[in-house]
Amino acid sequence: MPSPARTAGAADSGGMTEAKKILRETFGLREFHKLQGEIIGALLAGRSAIVIMPTGGGKSLCYQIPSMLRGGTGIVVSPLIALMKDQVDALRQHGVRAACLNSGMPYDEQRRVMRDLRGGNLDMLYVAPERLLTDGTLAMLGEIQLALFAIDEAHCVSRWGHDFRPEYIQLSILAERFANVPRIALTATADEATRRDIAERLALRDAKQYTAGLDRPNITYTINQEGNARRALLEFIREKHPGESGIVYCLSRNNVDQTAKWLSANGVRALAYHAGMDKDAREKNQTTFLREDGVVMAATIAFGMGIDKPDVRFVAHLNLPKNIEAYYQETGRAGRDGLPASAWMRYGLQDIVMLRQMLENSEAGEDFKRVEQRKINALLEFCESPDCRRRVMFAYFGETYDRTCGNCDNCMHPPETWDGSVAAQKAMSCAARTGQRFGAAHLISVLLGRDTEKIRRFGHDKLSVYGIGGEHGEAEWYSIFRQLTAAGLLAPDMHGGLGLRDGSRAVLRGEEQIFFRKLPPRARAKTRSGAAQAKPPPMLHGEDAELFEKLRAARLTLSREQNVPPYVIFHNAALIEMALAKPRNARAMEEVPGVGQVKLERYGGVFLDVIEKFLRARG
Ligand code: ADP
Ligand code: ZN
Image (cartoon, rainbow, N blue to C red):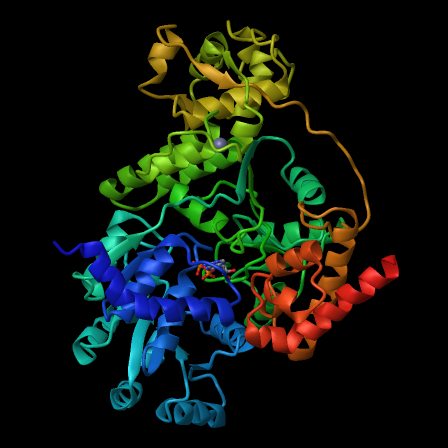
């Protein structure tokens, strides 16, 4: 009986041997990740594929290598013109014959690219969907040999996501006009509706779906409640990521500007990005963020879709994200290169009140509101949960994670909980007795028995709940109100007044126990000042760290000379390995991951010199 595995292996092995050779020699990498090998095998055999892999999972190689191996040119459809150039630059650095085509390019350059394309001199062509779909481009593609079509950011075809692009739907035409050319659609967005849309709308119903797990093991998740947001952020940056690239998401434009200013004033190199800025200023900031080391971008969520920068070391949220999907996607922009990275969030009662109010006041239909309501509840449960962050997040996406991760705040510093049934009763009866129309600030004043003008005006000092909350401090009461609001036991009205809900009664009557997270120990009010100094990656110490800085400086010089981002020359992972292994000749240098043949020729000398000099100086 023939073994099916062996038959498949034999059929694929020729192509796969070549594929591995390219992985090693061109890209300087050792092994394929598990799914990469399978996907490349499928494309080499002429089959189409749908690939759902988290950010940083290594999607690009899945179509780059088959584009190089199959006859003809691989056409890569990507929605973001701004990014194409960097992607093409990165490929050219490896000696791959890649180009991009978009209508914003000078006419001469467009002509040159088309000539190269017709002459069969391109392994890969990056093109925006609107350009691809013109009659002219389609006709031209009909005349040349095509290796494959890669449709990047394929979730743009779905109306469910917030990145919907109508042109993507028309890409189904590729299946009709180029029936024999394999197509591969790729995305990091994993939800069911989006997957279905990709298969349906891109005419990929018969294509195999390759789904990698959601986990981004190199990201450390931390979620803080209360406390001064900006101060906590600054403390976090100084402690964990001084001098490193990061994104800080804020809710409003005004908030973005303020945060950028404030960080700058405190020695962090920070820029702003939001839709209210004029286009030039916005683009300039984006370019600086991409090209320079260690810039922090304060931004609204308008920033980030398709930001391919691999060395974003942290993503911070100064407000609650919209839902868990958004949180996963936004934090996913950290640490694409696989090195340690952070997702950090801070939110408070006010954020919860706002999120719930926004939904209440929205004009949307009841069905939509119900779905959104569920998503908000899930988000708040996630944020408040003392359980492993990964476990809660993946459960939401329907993926089981039956262990604890050891790389989130709750795993590393398990929060303490306390029986807050009595405190909850006090807080809720205070809201009830005052007419369910006051916000937490006033309710806390009543509980603490304060003497304020407002309390006297409403006669709240005459109520039985006046002054019954002395056993907790103000901060603790805020934390209690936050947790009750997050759990939906209290709910804000249009003006932020907190009222009871269906579920409140049982707790109020003492029929249900309720547990709260303890307030974390007070954040140290360290006010170190001065510029944040860049810190070497955590795995480097002493001499190695010094050498790393020298290598980094050499990389910056090269990147400035060529006007490309530093990571296009070498990723940090490559520099780290150089700093550790200290290669002294080309052979040893070639062992460093990310050093392919072309890069070895181009840059090997420069970096070997840096290492040699460094070692000599040490004697
Ligand atoms: P995605 O597009 O899925 O976000 P990329 O294709 O940009 O991910 O790859 C992310 C990072 O992983 C890049 O730095 C890339 O060089 C690296 N990478 C990809 N495949 C491999 C591999 N097989 N071995 C080592 N590193 C890899
Ligand atoms: Zn965990």
